[in-house]
Length: 509
Image (cartoon, rainbow, N blue to C red):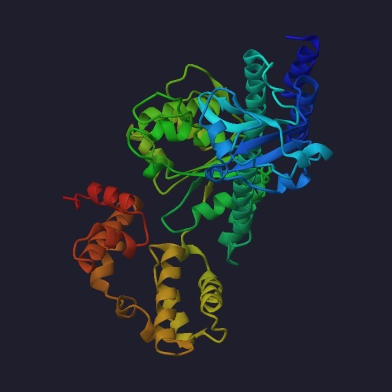
């Protein structure tokens, strides 16, 4: 190779690791051709996903070429270049039409007599682009050594790959930022939706404000439907991590056999189907918060691994021997009594104490003094907005009916009940929600059916709640002819979770 070629190749190689934008790198590559090859014009094309060749840099050609896209089937010379892994020469007497006919800037271009040369650009066996050279001198490219062309083509291909990868990484990073921002906005949107004026709800707000500014682990307890997830969002939204994502994990829904991978990630080949490296939930939450809902459902083996993350801030992906450090704030929630689970040997005592640094108990609706009218007004406003019915109101007797209910399903049950009644009123084209619009079971106050949930003698809360859950599942299955998927839709919950609950109550056979 001549010294001039060596200098040009060195400059191109250095540009591969420079901070130049893609257009500047493309043009540097084309400018180097003039210093090495006897050509009057040159063009660099990138092959796009649709099979078109898009010019990204030209020299000696009209700038209008950069606004075009070339489909190889309609340009035989470009198609021939793409089909050959060796440089292709087109002599002055070649009858194939020139894609740049009339686009050369040289005054002698009108003679339309010139030699052409083209190289296909491959990276790891994949075609990424094409390089073309034109000369007004007949036979100008006959003296060029193949090794010189192949070396230049390899660097050109590397340039295209480098720029393509950088663009892909930037696009991926932008997408990830958008996802993160969406999660942040979701968390922020939850703030301020903790509706209620009762002393109990005010105490809850005070507890959240107290712990939010720290990095302490928080264990949120409470019955189903009280709003534990809302509390978790509120803690995160008031914390110093509020500009980072809060990653949600439903521990009860973690797929068997893949739970560890979901939480801690895996490396390629760790198990069948692990075709690439994958980050787990904890890595995604690095710098932010992870919310472990239904943490009492976490398998015993994973409890030990979770303890390690909390204690030392390190984890291992499945199939890897490397330790990764993460900085994650833990918020956990459960409707179980983890203290009792510890006593029964079903939950690790050391993990419980790590999670229970600052416990927050969410009060059930029946113990929130005077909050039902406020909640009913808030929930009804959502219906008004959704159906654009600003004059939809609740009859005073209906409100009295709602205040008398025990609400074992708490706020969630109140919302579903009120929404159903509102829809019945809307269906009847009425703007007042009357007692008759509510479920008949709400009106009857059937003591026979409800007394077992309110025993005269002392009973454990967990067993009472589980009895109610079992009866609800039986009721939903009866209404849906025993179809689990439809029963899950009726109860507005995940089918897998419903089936697991049914299996727990010996209802799934």
